[in-house]
Image 1: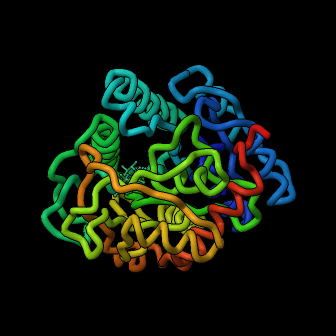
Image 2: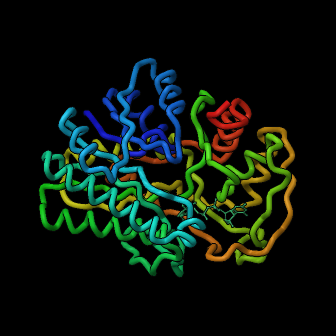
Image 3: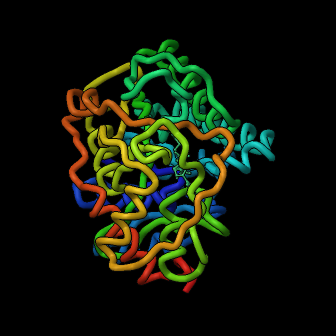
Length: 338
Ligand code: UFG
């Protein structure tokens, strides 16, 4: 299959590109590199041993998208491109709504014009909001998001659901990711956030290589086994394989399906710190800090729908995630810009 990956040079996009190549597909990347870089594409090519077609363009640019669709007969699109920093979305809501919604609408309109009807969307567990119970199941109604980033994911899901209702020949898979971490086992591609990371694992990785002094653990008084927040961390390579399965699924089904991609296991902040220290033989200094506003105590996925519909289950454990994250960070202490 020929598959367009918007944001294909980013963290999840690059790993998905590798897995699609390994599965014999033909991915094409479009990326504006605002939160990624061409070096990631070169690394993908190094891993898979062949070139990957990549367009530098913005998905909100209708003329550029029209040209890309004219030059390629896509079977399916995976839409990763989008702004994703929760805190930044609170201070720049208009930019987040404009960018994330505009890009999706432009992409859908271009697909409609060119008769491409299969869409896999990079959604998030954040769409569930703070549910009264775990695990999170796809049939739980959202209780509302806590920030504009989350609302853009929510709204995009609604846009795509609406399109499937209007044209039942569309096939949309809304993949709700839990917490993707880890890196490709080669150590060549991984997460490369700009500036000080907001998320836990990239922050730990930078402490591990000495770029940051210590981790702040945001709260140790949650109603969880050790008091720190619990999340469903999933290895990015498992997540990427879930996308390959979702593309296959979209070929044989129509309509709109929400599918969780998680492991079904919750780990605390301290579980992650302790595992990282143990498998990598490195001390991660930390202090207990106040809770971060907007954080919830605990979430993890019910991953049974992914198993049932896609035949997909996460295979890698927390140790793999910690080892692979450190390998990439150690090999690339300054990320891709060595
Ligand atoms: N944490 C710390 N210190 C840090 C960073 C995080 O203690 O420096 C804690 C948080 O309080 C939380 C856990 O680590 O308990 C995980 O936090 P992350 O920021 O890594 O991830 P979140 O679960 O807050 O958010 C992630 C994605 C969002 C997505 C959400 C979906 O970053 O994009 O999952 O649930 F929306």
